[in-house]
Image 1 (tube, rainbow, N blue to C red):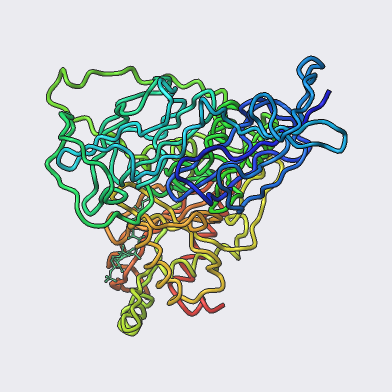
Image 2 (cartoon, protein in one colour; image 1 turned 120 degrees about the vertical axis):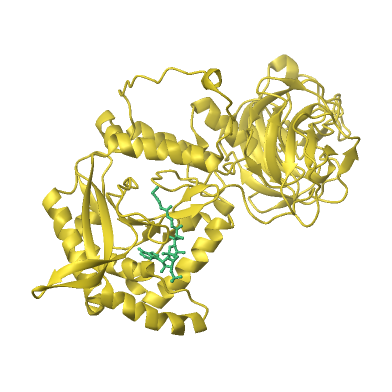
Length: 571
Ligand code: CAO
């Protein structure tokens, strides 16, 4: 026999008009007890509302973007009940024996109004970051488990940060799961994690230490209402003090060299606790999933789509796509370096770690060859110097790189296989008819490769301006996801620093990368005499599966010709 149960928004504490950011079920869908139904996000926290029981979604009344308060109807659930259970006649008043509100159905079946969490064990309310217990010793905050209602010994099901990570106020730190709800505990302030004090699987209650957070200069707790507990005895405590406004920068931006990652950065992927749990159950790394929700939030459907795509890939395709199955490389044995002298252990930041993975993968999977050449840029440099003054008046720093980008697009148009990627099946080459150039930018946190889009349709001055802006945003950690996506070819310029040549690693799935070293005046034999010429060293690394050596030599020769006579840029 079927009974209809209304599922309403549970008691969210002080929260009212909380936005629905994700609806995780659809009408007609079967759900199990505790399956997340919707995700709510206030300005301080994110929480899933779980299903109070198993059943079929009969009438879904909320949509993404709605604002809801406790008691608002989420959906009606068609619940199968045993004859015996259904037997008690509906109480004539609008409440049944359990105190749940009942509605009469046309069929005579009762509709129960059930909140997801029973009254005696309400779902923990989302905890505003600013209200989390934080104690401070010098510049180090001890971040503790906030008030989570009546819950004790709640399991830590996910630890989202590690030592050395940079977090912003309100970034999720850990996920807790009771039998009634899943919730993220957000960071009360921006800073760097200097010590972790719990791990996955621990059971925690209010006040349990989570981690130690060293505030960044200028960073402060999320609001002034952060409770300051007496100084802790944290070993990691420093003498820094917190002052000023919280920084705007997001956590470490993505290394996109080489980056097949959908998530643009080392930042924690934006997904509700329920979606993260779903991904975990399927063994999906959310860094690899492109989010289609607002602000690139990863939805359950995105995870499902990702899994479908992965399953559809045959083994050969997986290899072509850059996975290293079957590679059994012997690992270096661990060495106790301290036995030979003093050492310092310095944790690697998130960018460095991600870059290491991607560079290693590209290094192993792409057969690299590097073609070296030199371009005579004497005239181009003269022209640049003249134009530089004029550009400076409009606030633009005109460096050689902007000219190089235009020259590369000329060469890519002439040699389209350099502006391509191998299809995942390894059967076809995908030649792109758009020219988006990645530019490797050196930042204090590591290498990041933002992308300048549509270079073919931009002038040198526009490119120089954009280059200046994007390098600044990269170093200020202000990149948007789209700034890191869609690259077709990469330039890595070390010319401002020095060196004569290097072998850049191809930014897979691209197939070629141009390394640029420092231009030098050299004696060049021309017209029966040695002439002082400004020579720019170029190092083109390419994927030898796609590009032959002869083609690469033609590419760099063409490029040097374009650079030697800037008028060719107009062609
Ligand atoms: N030869 C001689 N001088 C050069 C040059 C070259 N190849 N390239 C740049 N310069 C000059 C510039 O013209 C500028 O001089 P002026 O001030 O007189 O104009 C000066 O060096 C500094 O340039 P820059 O490096 O600040 O600017 P850019 O546009 O050339 O480069 C950027 C911008 C973001 C690419 C650069 O700052 C950077 O981060 N480079 C490092 C990239 C990197 O780490 N690559 C390695 C990846 S592989 O591990």
